[in-house]
Image (cartoon, rainbow, N blue to C red; front, side, top):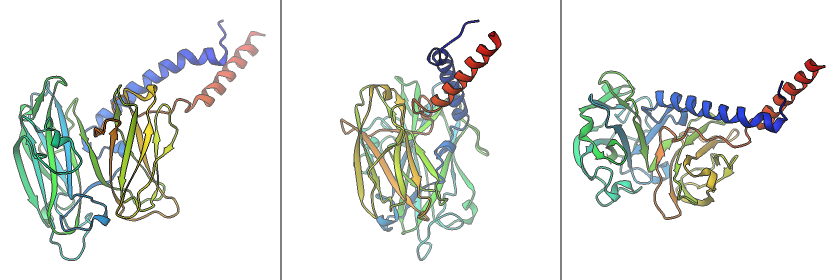
Length: 349
């Protein structure tokens, strides 16, 4: 019987285990890839305020832009579904009269994503690039309160064709065009008009996230920016955190590196170095709500750049899977290894 030292024993099993967990993790996330926010992000709602809202309520520009990637292998129509698109009723953040209107617009065609203005965090310049495919404006509408509205059908080829990636890109722009209330909503990118059915191989991403934190003390939300092989540092920017806990980065190298936090109605940022072993993988940027002084109805904005000042994507499916710190579980595995060796020694006597 071959006997391994703890280190020797761990080498092969850990490699197999990591590969296995990566495959399982990716498959699991893929099966839930279509909701935005995704289940694994633990974010209850996206938020867009009317353009007369106060920025101190957590929305810096009253606009949110999302992209949907659809593989070129998709031949049947797709649908973009919005949950609770009206502003008023069960979930939304209301101030005074119900006067807010929110416009949802779908774009495809040349330039929908590739135009550089579309990849910025501020709605300026030609951010409405591409061909508009559909739009609808919602005010207070009981029909869509706590219910779905479906855009489409769209042919996959209606999106912007990206041969290098083997996908079509669609763009969804949500703008508060009137009023001062906060519209809380979610997306589901579906292969069905009437129910939520995932589009195989698709993903969704944004460059700036404006979202509602859960109210439950101690809750943790997750965003997953991908680090390409040329990223050596990042700069994170957060707006209107309101002293609601802490923000930390988890990766292969980082167990919980803390980020600088914003206050009421201001931006704060901090720089973080990226190691070679963190490249070609996603970070897990965690928003950890306070356990003792949790703020209700806390909306925040967040974006990130690399050392070149380029905006980074947050993917609904973390590319490469959810990152894990290199020593997580290692001590326990070594203890199990020691037990294994002790049993073998006893049996061999």
